[in-house]
Length: 254
Image (cartoon, one colour):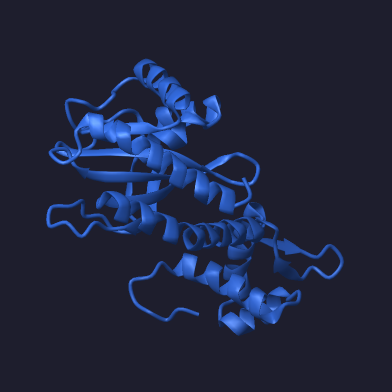
């Protein structure tokens, strides 16, 4: 249990419930839970009802006791998949970065944004500085566009409706019709290019990573300063980025 400062008590309480149920590995009644958590039962009922509604805990129909719910499996599987993906991708990312002496990223899509989960940084003095955990819009990044391109159209439209098309540079695509035409071209070529669309002076080329079923689950890219990466060079790099993405995909069973 977390006793630190600057925490949200209601979230803390919910996580404490999940951790106790995980540690005990058995159904537990509300009375016992309230004693373990040192909270009154009326307060605890609200937390338990919220977790029940979201599927993170279940209630035994006969005893009324609580146990972990099936929604926990979805989060656990996603975490394990990302860990497995990172472990298998690392040597491939390093090889790709060494080959071109540029920074290589791997991202996944979470809640409509790309999240950087792995990187291999260039050793050049002028290079792209990013951090694992960084979140960026999908519509103006190479990796975001490869994830959008192979997404179900309805799911993609939901993201467009939620996030829109914020303009970052003169090259940012800012409307759905143009983006859909662009994504069709991405699917046709098998890779995407970010031509200074999120930041002036930055370009990248990206390709999709697929799981055992063929579903696109992540993307990788080579990124660098536009002075060092003219569009002609990006097209030349696209083959090696696509090959690296395929190598990672095959290690996942594709």
